[in-house]
Amino acid sequence: MKLILENAKLIVIKIGSVLVRGDALDQANQPWMDALAQDIRTLRDQGKKIVLVSSGGVALGRKALNIASDISPSSIPLAKKQAASAVGQYHLFNGYFKAFEKQGITTAQVLLTMSETENRRMNLNARETLHTLLESGIVPIINENDTVSTEEIRFGDNDRLSVRVAQMILADTVVILSTTDGLYTDNPDTNTQAEHIPFIDGLTDEHTQMAGDAIAGLSTGGMKSKIEAASAATKSGINFIITDGQDNHALSHLYDDQAKIATLFAAQKCDNNARKIWLGAHMNPKGSVNIDDGALSALNSGKSLLPVGIKSVSGDFKRGDVIEIKTLSGDKIGMGISAYNADDARRIIGVNSAKIHEILGYIGRTELIHRNDMVL
Ligand code: GLU
Image 1: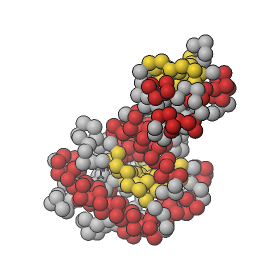
Image 2 (image 1 turned 180 degrees about the vertical axis):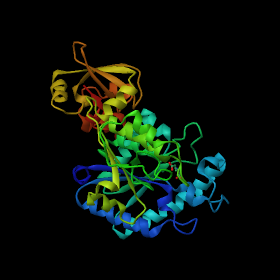
Image 3 (image 1 turned 90 degrees about the horizontal axis):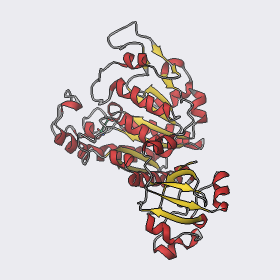
Image 4 (image 1 turned 135 degrees about the horizontal axis):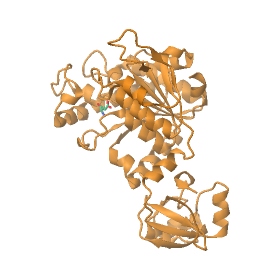
């Protein structure tokens, strides 16, 4: 565990509702948040970048909407849940804001819906925003945008959202701070013989069965959704850790490297990196570009595709669509996400990136297809 965390560069930390709610129903658990912010500061001092995905909007808005604490999230009518989240999200973010401020760290509130991670254009924007925040030393704190989500498009749980975010920004590790220290051979609440599993290298159906269906208290996902999230993460080469986050400083305890403190689902080797998988899922090219030999060798040496190396553009695509990359003789060499629409791409063919602003009248991206958005 220690080694995984030491090697991690970009970590998504998901926090469950139970952890952020204080004794008063509508207040954040400030001491817990303060301790978390301290732990995150330590990780950042080691050069790591951190993104939080935090639940708790609905939980912290319950009081205002008169939702009793013993009603499970799935039994709250959707409109009431959405209204509660609109109230509670403020308390949630405010708690984090104060905790991180004490560490001299700026935070950003980012509310995402399913479509932002599925839709290419929005995905491109959300990803660039997150990277810009990270590069500016800011900790993004993400939650689902519950007030606009509808039942059909809701993630239902932030476990999956945290993996989507990790895939989107190419994070290497997801840490789930939960109320359980990981996966057991059976439900430990009902079976005292259940044994904790510290390490899983390749999930099987057996593991899914061990997770069961039980969902406790305020949480919306339960172990089942965590296993599904673990599967998605590890298949795209991301380490996935579930640990009990209830103690203050739970995050720093992970470094203690005690086997029983967490379950590590090891990243699986894949020919495809995360982006490739994502591209694969959206592979329906809307157009293509032919590139010159200079651009071809730039791509082969791991660089991005710049407008200057493009000779022609075909098709009608929008910013964020997948397009094919072809050589001058028309051989297909790869595909990637275009940062410009087809019309604008045509206008900047062969142009040095410094001139893009002058030609298009806005400051766009330096690359037509960024390296991270490309599969060769
Ligand atoms: N977005 C919901 C909230 O803030 C939580 C969803 C979840 O727990 O997975 O309350």
